[in-house]
Amino acid sequence: AQSVAQPEDQVNVAEGNPLTVKCTYSVSGNPYLFWYVQYPNRGLQFLLKYITGDNLVKGSYGFEAEFNKSQTSFHLKKPSALVSDSALYFCAVRDTGSARQLTFGSGTQLTVLP
Amino acid sequence: GAVVSQHPSWVICKSGTSVKIECRSLDFQATTMFWYRQFPKQSLMLMATSNEGSKATYEQGVEKDKFLINHASLTLSTLTVTSAHPEDSSFYICSARPGENTGELFFGEGSRLTVL
Image 1: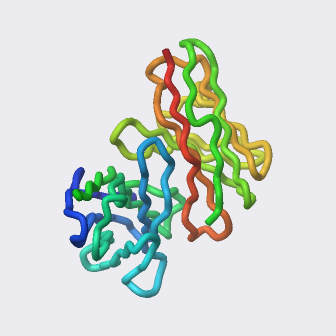
Image 2: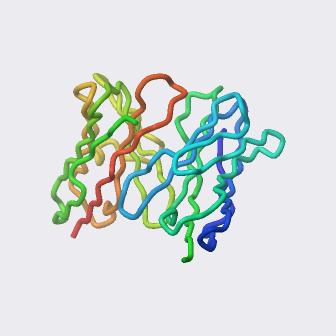
């Protein structure tokens, strides 16, 4: 079985401050990990992914995420938040040893305060 | 990145009518497309996997006769909500993956269905 947990429903951060959106996962094999962002009444936009290689992955709009195998985490980070980063963020995982499709976390609403 | 187009963006219909939502991959061919349902402030729930030229694979608990999926070409999948009722009101999103199996999914803009 595969699962994803986003422990925070809501994250608030001041503009210019660093932000972190947390994600932990559970798979039986090796994971493919993804972050997506969703703006109101829109589809999901791909931010970044970890397949293999460097644990620190850089993605769109200045976001990055660090794969930590021992902690089974894939937290999303950005050094300096923008008001326009306010949106709903989803972490997703796929078990490479499984035929199952992506499993999404419950989502974290990020609000960047001006 | 790859583009997935979904139409219509918004649809309002009367209870008992059927509604068709289209999902197109504009710049790539997709043998497989995915349909999701999203309730307000909740995550995406995979409804079914749409396979070009064959029957869709439905997730447990999703009614096949209620949500008809047709994937007639490599660039088009349709979801028809048959005899819609207010409880079918939701945000429906499709996605597709070009190329290798390790790649990311690309999503349509979603379709907001409201059944009166």
